[in-house]
Length: 132
Image (cartoon, rainbow, N blue to C red; front, side):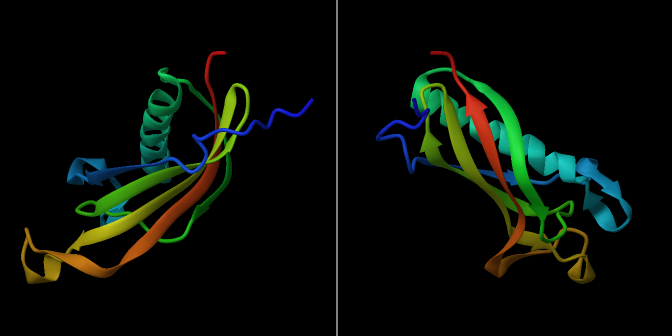
């Protein structure tokens, strides 16, 4: 029997936006550790579970995590989760973290620019599990 079910939850998209604090910088050049974005993916996945099933659920696994561009302190990130498969208790999600704005320290300590196009920083797929 297939775990796949026909469900209107398919395609649900949830987005969070977050300012990346300088306290989150971990490496030279104000780079932020990749695990920071994985934590944000967990947050947006939790909201998906609450919206689809009324429960925080459990993030069971990540698949195909790819770091495309650096995340730096001073960035504004948008993290998006989209439900791509709905099973009896599991849901697959496509996850994307994009940089929407970035600090511009060459113009001053508090200067920043909205990017003309979002910069895809991290993509992943994940599976979440919710109670039956």
